[in-house]
Length: 373
Image (cartoon, rainbow, N blue to C red; front, side, top):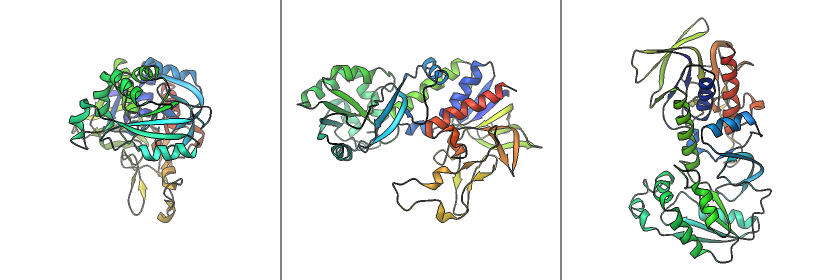
């Protein structure tokens, strides 16, 4: 099997790069192990500004976004600056989002921290009241904590969103704001807006523990778009070795394809950070496991972390070293046709932004360089 480009990693950066290359007429394959950072996605591209190209890419995939500089509500009741976001993520001019808030959770759902949310909002001057919905349709899920998760709940409540609206209306008193867990719109991104229209108060959807319903939906839509454009998506597979000669990557072998090598003119490493094992840490070093690339990290392990758990952690800034063209470095030298995109870069290119912004910007940058070849 030979392609113009092989992308290692099927998350946000891998899919954006794949879609961009396929639209340009390049043949590509994505090798994905499975879960990726989109399962943790807040729904906002925090370091992205308004960009017509980016917005068109998402719109063509059915991922509805809006650009509204402001702040978003976090699961802990605090607020973070955001601008470009999924359509069902509320952005506000300031942290003053109302006077009184009704926080509604589902009985037995423990991945939405209603009390923490209330405490955080009360610090912003809101009066909060927490209530629970007890829906018979969720009783089967309530029997097992492993089943009572965001995606499973979404599959149950999306078809009965009108009933959810009715139940919330019965709970509502004089509150001007209703906060619901972000467990709506898995298959149909319009469901959150329908709920907003049905409740006579401002409706805000707050994040839950992973998996993120907006993130999973975004993953499904981008993957569908990529495949419709002719891209090959190898799901549940991983690269186990690579054939590199004189600074050029010629092919990679995957676990599922045994001895069949996948060849390409160019390769993109978008394997993510620690969660997806794009970076691996042991007591002695932080390393990149596929190609053994150079990694920018602190040699003194005591400097990897901040004892204050809630503060910025140094290890989150570690990443694969690249040259100015985002080509990976190995032993200080660039591999001619191996490019790096996404969170595996860490903070090595701060000009590309952070989080989802880094994923999208770096993916477009490496796709543009490959299209120039």
